[in-house]
Image 1 (tube, rainbow, N blue to C red):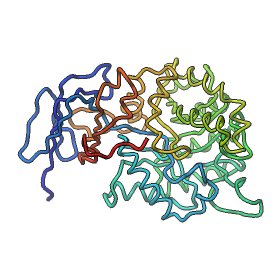
Image 2 (image 1 turned 45 degrees about the horizontal axis):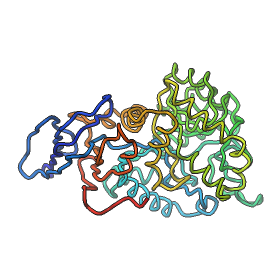
Image 3 (image 1 turned 135 degrees about the vertical axis):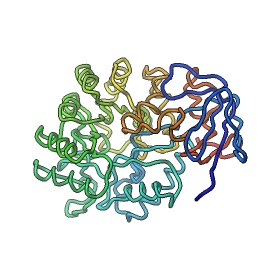
Image 4 (image 1 turned 180 degrees about the horizontal axis):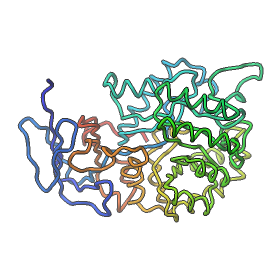
Length: 414
């Protein structure tokens, strides 16, 4: 039997993941990976490590619900040809780096590989074989032929590379979903509209027929799996909602009717706002990939306005970045992008903690309370006053294990 481990976090102001204000001067006792006590003073077991967090805001660990640990947009065609081991090991390095920024749980939404590298990485992290954040995965991006998840357009036409999970017709769609389930995926990820970085498709247009989209969601529901949908145009967003999706990823061009539908249906929107700023910067620098330029020039102003529309709505917004499509070192900037779009700092923090946890169906994370998993971060200052405080995380605990301490010299490589 392993000995008890304990830590006492002293006198930080606490954002508990749900409240509208900070609880001042709160100590936290962590025992064996779980929050045991919280209050103005707590027990101090013999041998417990005491961490001074005065002047800090203590928060639940951040949850990013949309990353790609095994995809590199800067060299996607070449990167997809790497081995499964290379992808998993690269993903491990990125996940460990991202943990330093305060992200203790990640939802990876698809690898481009005929095998299942993120499932293997998730299992290695869960078993403690390697160290890093908690990982929830959708193994692949299920797509129609020539849809957003079909990478064949990146390669010469005579090549037939099995890196995409492509299907057409209800029977084949069901088979793909069942294969994902059999191989251990946590979520089903699909695309029902085109994307900006993919070739041969258009984000404003749908790519699944209604019966195919319905087959994705019905088969997933039969198997007990939630569905995340990369989506763009307003009609595609509504199709995903009607079909039973749990989360809309990007929702680039959703309209007011679609947001009302999502709100009534309890569907989450993951608006990936920083990625739009990254794409705009590339467009202005002339480095945006050719296949994205015409689409992004056409839609960029509407995407910005749509983000403001999402911010004004009552829909459940969950924090997600699409890191992998841009550097993981920029992912924490999503908080600022959300606030710039009109989302309050409080709502942005909830989006990355309690709301993200609800999206994932995890009652044990996303909040600070006795009995919750001790995924805890801290940052000097008050993020409710200045959301940029989230970019200065200098304490990270994951399941009771401390990975960063204030003053340890492992500053963020912005």
